[in-house]
Image (cartoon, rainbow, N blue to C red; front, side, top):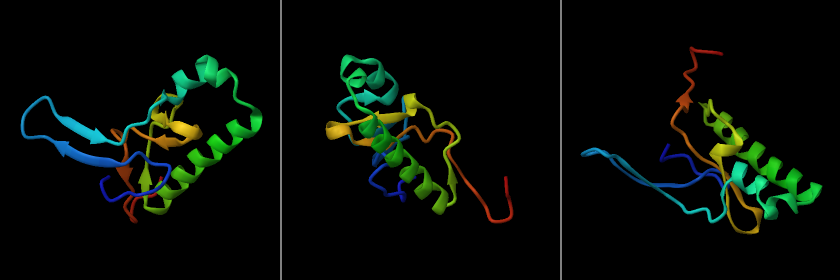
Length: 105
């Protein structure tokens, strides 16, 4: 996952797995999950154009994952983070898997 770089994927900075609990350091997204953001007063005020742009950014991130032969397997509003100026980034790669050429789904 550390090799995946796209404007709409959360950036992984570091992972510490020497002892439990394990730690993952990622970039900070100030507005939290898309699910909570859309349920907030700020989210309710979004117009259709902004919502479509956010959806397009998510689709762009998913297309990048596909081009790199990765499957997210748990894309949901709770696993998309929102930052300033309606930036959206796909997060939570816990279920992500690499697709091998010999295995087609």
